[in-house]
Image (cartoon, rainbow, N blue to C red):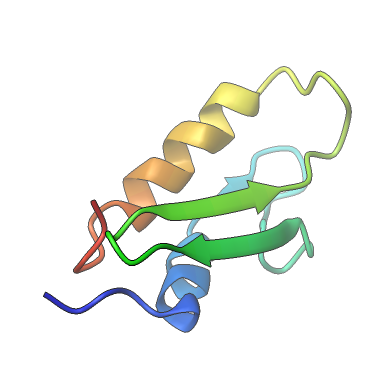
Length: 74
């Protein structure tokens, strides 16, 4: 099974939308890093707009929902 590429992960993150700003986390420059381990684990670091962001869990779930289905993600 092939691992996802950073480009594939970035493309999938374009569907993660900041509900207040109505733009993707990619367009807003909120994606700080993407790590892809040999076992298929993908780590994404997103800089939230405010400390203690009240919709943090929504962002986390949106990342899982959009990155999780990529081939090779475990």
